[in-house]
Length: 83
Image 1 (cartoon, rainbow, N blue to C red):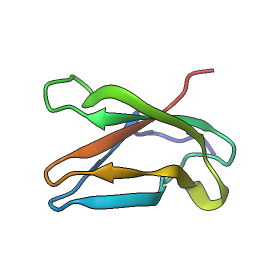
Image 2: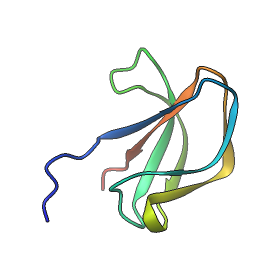
Image 3: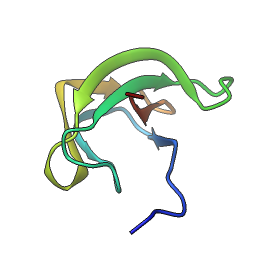
Image 4: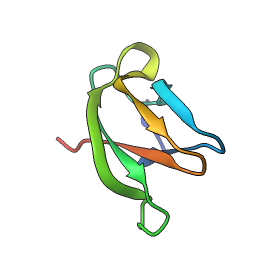
C-alpha cells in the first residue's frame, strides 16, 4: 500500500513539566533512525537544536535514553533521518 500522506515531523508539546522516557510515532517503521530536536516556535518546522538520535522500536515506540526533561510550555520535534 502506498501512503498518501506522511507527517514530515511529529511535534510533542506539554502544559506542565514532564519527564518523557518513551513516545510513539505512528507510521514510522521499526528500525528507522529519528532525530529529536527541542521545539522552537520561530523555526519553520518547529525544530530547534538537536537533542538526540534514536531508533524506532516495535509499534513505532521510541525509548528515550536518557529521558527528555520538557519544561512547562515547551516540547520537542521528531523527524526521520534522511538516508
